[in-house]
Length: 101
Image (tube, rainbow, N blue to C red; front, side):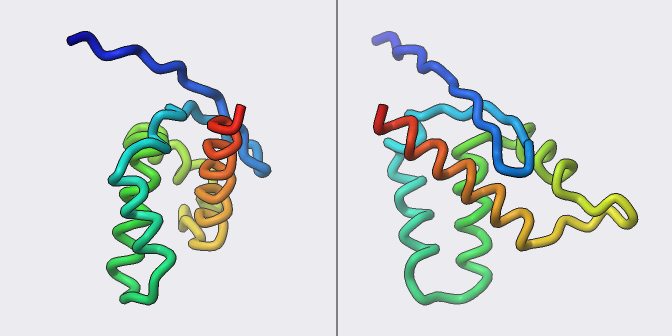
Protein backbone atom coordinates (compact mmCIF):
# COMPACT_ATOMS: atom_id res chain seq x y z
CA UNK A 1 0.00 0.00 0.00
CA UNK A 2 1.45 3.36 -1.04
CA UNK A 3 1.85 6.01 1.60
CA UNK A 4 0.45 9.39 0.80
CA UNK A 5 3.04 12.11 0.44
CA UNK A 6 2.56 14.87 2.95
CA UNK A 7 3.06 18.53 2.22
CA UNK A 8 5.72 20.26 4.25
CA UNK A 9 4.98 23.69 5.58
CA UNK A 10 7.57 26.40 6.08
CA UNK A 11 7.73 27.86 9.54
CA UNK A 12 9.49 31.05 10.57
CA UNK A 13 10.09 31.56 14.27
CA UNK A 14 9.95 34.93 15.97
CA UNK A 15 13.74 35.17 15.78
CA UNK A 16 13.74 34.47 12.03
CA UNK A 17 14.72 30.79 11.95
CA UNK A 18 13.14 29.09 8.94
CA UNK A 19 12.48 25.37 8.71
CA UNK A 20 10.13 22.94 7.04
CA UNK A 21 7.88 20.76 9.15
CA UNK A 22 5.54 17.94 8.38
CA UNK A 23 2.15 18.77 9.91
CA UNK A 24 1.37 15.04 10.05
CA UNK A 25 3.96 14.76 12.83
CA UNK A 26 1.17 16.03 15.11
CA UNK A 27 -0.52 12.67 14.49
CA UNK A 28 2.42 10.63 15.79
CA UNK A 29 2.10 8.87 19.12
CA UNK A 30 5.82 9.42 19.79
CA UNK A 31 5.24 13.17 19.66
CA UNK A 32 2.24 12.88 21.99
CA UNK A 33 4.32 10.78 24.39
CA UNK A 34 7.10 13.39 24.39
CA UNK A 35 4.61 16.14 25.17
CA UNK A 36 3.18 14.07 28.02
CA UNK A 37 6.64 13.61 29.53
CA UNK A 38 7.23 17.37 29.35
CA UNK A 39 3.95 18.16 31.11
CA UNK A 40 4.33 15.79 34.06
CA UNK A 41 6.63 16.06 37.02
CA UNK A 42 9.77 14.12 36.35
CA UNK A 43 13.50 14.24 36.32
CA UNK A 44 15.41 16.69 34.17
CA UNK A 45 17.10 13.96 32.11
CA UNK A 46 13.77 12.47 31.07
CA UNK A 47 12.41 15.89 30.11
CA UNK A 48 15.56 16.77 28.15
CA UNK A 49 15.31 13.52 26.24
CA UNK A 50 11.64 14.30 25.46
CA UNK A 51 12.57 17.75 24.08
CA UNK A 52 15.11 16.22 21.69
CA UNK A 53 12.63 13.55 20.57
CA UNK A 54 9.99 16.24 20.00
CA UNK A 55 12.36 18.40 17.97
CA UNK A 56 13.60 15.54 15.80
CA UNK A 57 10.04 14.44 15.08
CA UNK A 58 9.11 18.01 14.12
CA UNK A 59 12.08 19.09 12.00
CA UNK A 60 14.61 16.23 11.76
CA UNK A 61 18.30 15.99 12.58
CA UNK A 62 19.62 18.19 9.76
CA UNK A 63 17.37 21.13 10.57
CA UNK A 64 18.06 20.64 14.30
CA UNK A 65 21.75 21.32 13.58
CA UNK A 66 20.78 24.47 11.68
CA UNK A 67 18.64 25.56 14.63
CA UNK A 68 21.64 25.17 16.94
CA UNK A 69 23.69 27.36 14.58
CA UNK A 70 20.89 29.93 14.50
CA UNK A 71 20.63 30.34 18.27
CA UNK A 72 24.32 29.87 19.11
CA UNK A 73 26.08 32.80 20.70
CA UNK A 74 28.52 34.32 18.25
CA UNK A 75 31.40 34.77 20.68
CA UNK A 76 31.56 31.23 22.09
CA UNK A 77 29.15 29.01 20.13
CA UNK A 78 27.10 28.15 23.22
CA UNK A 79 23.44 27.35 22.54
CA UNK A 80 21.47 29.04 25.34
CA UNK A 81 18.71 26.85 26.73
CA UNK A 82 16.12 29.64 26.90
CA UNK A 83 16.70 30.65 23.28
CA UNK A 84 16.44 27.01 22.22
CA UNK A 85 13.21 26.55 24.19
CA UNK A 86 11.64 29.63 22.54
CA UNK A 87 12.45 28.29 19.08
CA UNK A 88 11.02 24.84 19.84
CA UNK A 89 7.85 26.44 21.26
CA UNK A 90 7.47 28.64 18.14
CA UNK A 91 7.87 25.63 15.83
CA UNK A 92 5.41 23.57 17.85
CA UNK A 93 2.80 26.37 17.86
CA UNK A 94 3.15 26.77 14.10
CA UNK A 95 2.56 23.04 13.68
CA UNK A 96 -0.54 23.18 15.86
CA UNK A 97 -1.84 26.15 13.88
CA UNK A 98 -1.28 24.30 10.60
CA UNK A 99 -3.47 21.40 11.77
CA UNK A 100 -6.33 23.83 12.48
CA UNK A 101 -6.41 24.99 8.85
